[in-house]
Amino acid sequence: MFNTSPNTQSGWQYLLYLPHWCRDDKKLVRVVCSSGAVVGHKTGNAEKIPEGDVHIPNKWKRQELVGRQYREKKKVKRETRKQRQEARARGEEVDVPVTTTIEMMREPDVTMLPPEGDDEVKADERMDEFRHTFPTPPPTSEVLPPAPAEEETPSTAPTTVEVGQAGGEEEEEEREPVEPKIMFTTSMAYPSERSYGLIKELVEVVPGMQYFRKKHFPITKICDFANNRGFTAVVVLSEDRKHEPSSLHITSLPEGPTSYWRLTSLELGADMKHGATCNPDDHPELLLNGFGTRLGHRVGRQIGSLFGAIQPDFRGRRVVAFHNQRDFVFFRHYRYVFRDLENAEKDDRCALQEIGPRFTLKLRSLQLGLFAKRTGEYEYVWRPDSQVSRKVFAL
Image 1 (cartoon, rainbow, N blue to C red):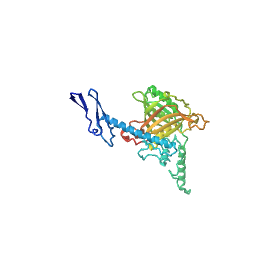
Image 2: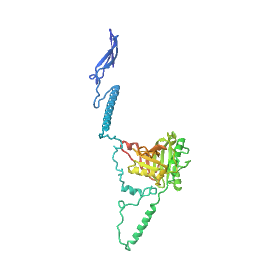
Image 3: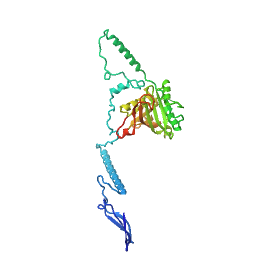
Image 4: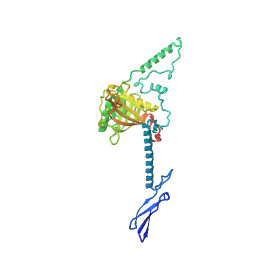
């Protein structure tokens, strides 16, 4: 705020009135040129940084104080880090502070599985939709206690026959793992060029995956057709209005479930710099990380059923990883390379070379049974209001 007043000797004098919150902390000094005109003003004493919640109405002054506080904090961190490095160079033990992440501040969830496993989950695995893909050991005494031994009497003889028949049925269920056979199609009759590139690379990544054109058939008819032809799963790729791959529907056959995933951050292997190639006949190793809840365990078993329980070909050196972090599932496809094995002193004798593609999945819904968008029964549906807190995760 300027105040102008005429003066016969020096012309116009410009006086600056400071706001009330900094009048006492600063000294105003006028800079006058040889002709007597005021050129500008400068301050004498440096202003102190206010402590606590102080409202400063001047926007430029707020920016200046915030920048000064940022530089002070950065200076303190730099000095602390320098002292820590000097102490480590002297051979002293230094307590490095642990960085606090959102995963460490995760709110407790009753559906979290213990690291040593859970007997109830093992019992569910023997009865879920993926029991034929992943062979499970027979039930232990902790889950199903054995029947007490009784003497053979005429009254118990028929009971013995029934138990034997039931045991035969259990033995029939515990068969060899089924080799995956997956039908891959699209929700549109004519996919874009980018969708074709993703289809081509995913067919080489997942063993047993075959691509079929959708034409004019609905998804429900496609699921029935694949179920009658012996397919174990149906994967449907969808696009958005910009003709970019945007979502995936994964339906496990013959009983379900059906999961709907949002697909983002897509980068094809053909577009990667220094990309590698692979032999699609070699079965890759599968890594599932971070699926710690009951829902995450169920979704992880569905993803694992796409690759099956077949022994991987280690000579191919292929690794497919699904890494869950904050309910975002990151898909990566690598090939590990060994170099300079004779030199045992080097620590980087093994390296990873990405093959591609890479993308990120976000679970939107999990539906019981086969694909039925309107009449289906949902186990899980993501909504914006269901994840208000950033410390709550579903998978």
